[in-house]
Image (cartoon, rainbow, N blue to C red; front, side):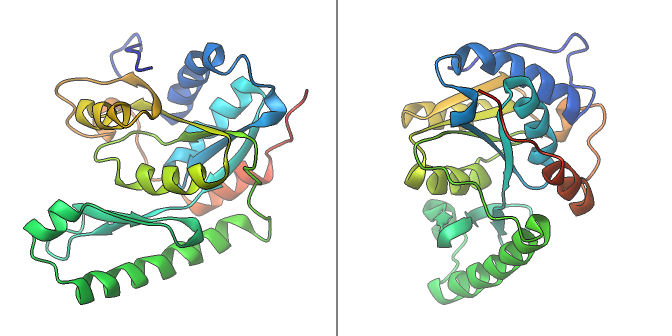
Length: 226
């Protein structure tokens, strides 16, 4: 499903522009599913901004899905796994073994990250229940995929309940896209360059997204028509 559709400037101006372009690219892919049966789930926090534009383009429901990466003790930015809602845990077992991380240490790290995930989820929802994915098309949106760890946690959760799932991102590392496609996962990536660098490299503006911004987007989300 991968498509290469570069912005005119070669990079996205910001997450908002990326979301608009992604929404347009998704339109023909979801045309056979009524808007009321689509739920766009943005990976909090940055993915929610992109997802808001996608949901607006598709006239679909917007919600957030909170996942958290588990970083290596020596390199916190190196994801060795991730946790998601419903007790979902995914690990890069090969990397865990290569780094020599013992199971007790991995368990302790995972529990700590799960607590942080639950706190953020509670904060962002402000009492709103998560969307029911049963029988729906879940469109999982992030601002980009570097390793795919967080998206795998979101995907694992969504596949438990949704009728079907699409992963949609403005940009992704080609090996991540290939891995998803090999597993039969429907994925849409607008920019999948050989020299990926990082997610932020493909945006002119890639500021950190605050919890307040996410709450405002979720609070203003309307139900889909039709």
